[in-house]
Length: 207
Image 1: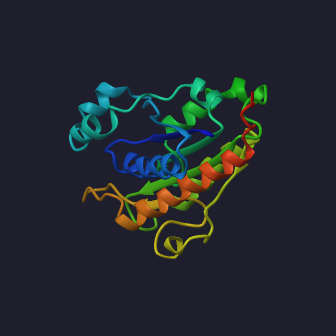
Image 2: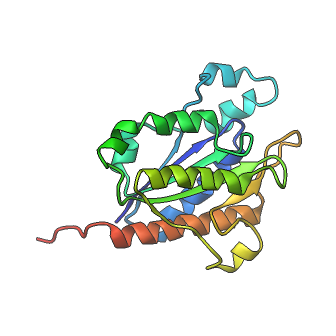
């Protein structure tokens, strides 16, 4: 059994859609896995996002219903999968704020040895999705986490995603959502992380 936290930052639900596929893949990998699908609180507050002219209704429908991640979720998890929309070639400020808030965990090595993976979306084909994945993975490495990447271990990786982690062109003026291929690749990564975390998790004591 592995405990897996999928934690995403999303404004209009496209990145949360990818997060949902990651969580689905992790949950289906084994009957005993405990998977939490969570969102990072935006630094501007839910009310501001709900009032946004073009994305407010989508935030309220697709993002707001998910529980907000806390540092306790990081402590609880055997594996942590982070996702963020791309902002100027890197993770969203709200995700960085969340991670910087975990400095106490970093200082005490609490996340050392936990499994980590990342995913991202951007509104244009070359908007920095892979760079954002690297940004998230770099933060995880500072915490001492063990990085799992999908590589090309499944045929879907040649049709969608990236070898570093799931990515998708989504959002933007057209309101794009991840394609079926993007979601399939995200499920593959979720399952891969679940398998890896289960192998590394301490065995349950027997009577």
